[in-house]
Amino acid sequence: MSDVVSVVHEPFDFGAIDELFSSSEPLLPPGEIGAFVEFRGVVRRTSPERTVVAMTYDGHPALIRRVLGEVIAEVRARAGVALACAVAVRLGCLKVGEASLVIRTGSRHRPPAYAANLEILEALKARAPIWKCEHAADGSRVWLDGCCLRSDHVGGHRHAHAPAGNDLPPPPAGHSHGHGGCT
View (cartoon, helix red, strand yellow):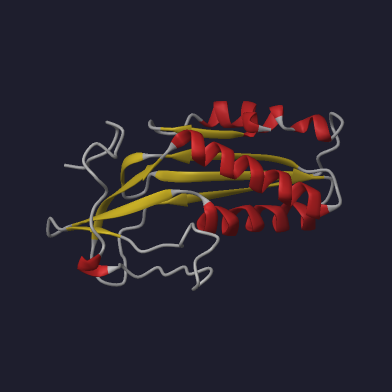
């Protein structure tokens, strides 16, 4: 199952994503996918409080792959139909307009493909250990608030798109795995 999740530090190779998606198809006989849905998340220029010039995505690749593999297995189990799924995550410094995420789902019919795609996206946002830092046009950097990854957290699921402000320290030195840092 882990073959259907890719974590990279370079711009996406969409040919490789095609291969990744094809490798998830044994659940469907060849030629049986009647619909596939692809979501691409891209860095946008504006946030509620600043003009963004870049975004750093940071995380632990092996843990991201494990969590997303679990998510895909759960989505497939709930779907009740055969699904082809692939997810590609990009870490590091991305400029405005660059893709940070690709989720591709396929099934015999449209509704399960759309539903699975959205379910994977929402689970990724809630469960994947990925941190985001906005780089603003004025030179400032702000680590964004996100979901608590602890299952025992009293507040439960919390997902805020607004920056956390100055109370959230940056990750420890070396946390970017040598791949991050927008200049």
